[in-house]
Image (tube, rainbow, N blue to C red):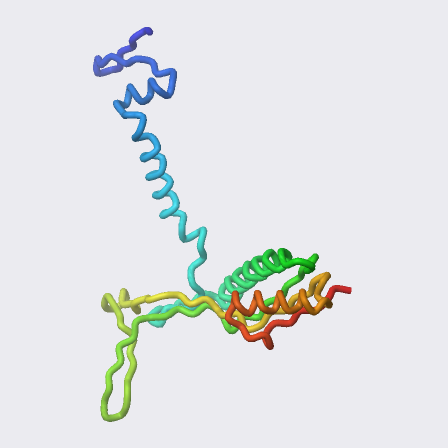
Amino acid sequence: MDAKHDYSGRTMLPVDTPSGVRRALGMKHSLIPVILIGSLGVILLLWGSRLFPSCGGTDPGNDSAPPEADLGAQTDVYRIGIEGRIRDICSEVTGAGEVSVIVTLDGGFRQVYAVEEKAGAAGVTRTYVTVGSGSSESAVFITCEAPSVSGIGIVCTGGNDPDVKREITSLLSAAFSLGSNRIYVTGRN
């Protein structure tokens, strides 16, 4: 190998192979996976808010509420995801065949904030717990609650068969804690 010199007079050796890179950097073979996994973790943390949409709704201490269209869009994405999961699991039921699904949600995403309750002569007063002061004051966010499923409609090839209808109704009732009166299964034309 031909040695080269940089401007400081240090000797630089050409690096051709991955093992040469490890030798040049003074790393052991076992550190490479750790560095790669750590880098992936940092990338996911930085990109996480783009992968998982934030909870819809508004901050009680914030005057700039997101547009209603954004809240509706987040709820639609959630509903479409649930419909896909239901379609996938129902199509696995023996005799169901091709499945179409529609889901009704009970409201939209709901943000939950810390609340302080004080009992007084006039009754209980509730105030949001805040941090910061002045224009930087904001409510303490606790969690985001997804809308609950209030009804499911299924149209499938085998939906006229009472056994298929019973199996799908039981499956969805157990999966979503819904009464059978909130699940409707029918056959496809």
